[in-house]
Length: 328
Image (cartoon, rainbow, N blue to C red):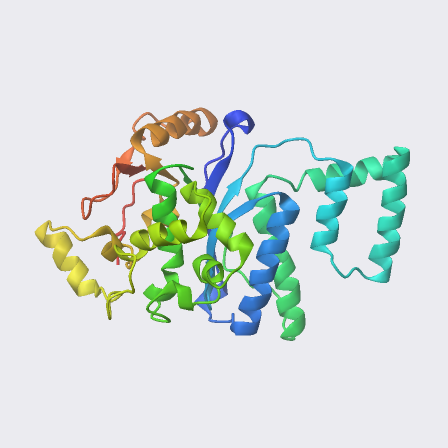
């Protein structure tokens, strides 16, 4: 399946992506121990690559992650070594001996140290390298621990370029954190261990910082109350069965031209959030469209597409139109 990702110039500043990857054949292979390993690796590799995780959700057959990829900047040798130790907190004897050689080469300016530095820098601030490293690292662990071989993931990851401020980023974050609610696993994502909001409520400081940064706030209590408005339309507990939106009921809304509250619609599968290529204000999507046409030589008929008129999206639009039914 084609990867829905827009590349933007290196001087365009920080970029936010919603990435999703599915298990081969849609099999529900990720049990709780596997999800726990993937959760830990997610944070480890993000720190190694210099990437900030806003939120994520890991289910039994796929995972989502909303992440900020900073513009490339110089990274000192000391910082590269710190990140490397974060990625390999318990190195093998060979890795430890090898790292001793690398550290000596870095200090002396030797060619082996220069080559190692270039390899590490190539992995920094790059969404493709982050996802590749995460999926490969987890696949090695999973196949070894489950006595299996072969591919674990069904496809290349999909990604959606998200406007880093305003309505878009919080809406996508809420959509991701509501994954376990859509799957019927919990009524409230705070009760699901393997999502960013659940980890943040449980006290994980990295998860709290991720949600604080998307809301541009500094106090977790205030940020949590505000974020629950995006999740439920209220800062209180969710209503019983608030997650239930049957395909039949949704289709009736589509046919009659009706509208739903955004918090209700986010409990449906919205393909625009995975296949729309770019999501944000019309001005943001138009800027990316200009870049897209230049890089990919798209025909002029490509245009900004408003989100379907089923709710008040706050002016959100996408780049890629979807031919198949997009909600359900």
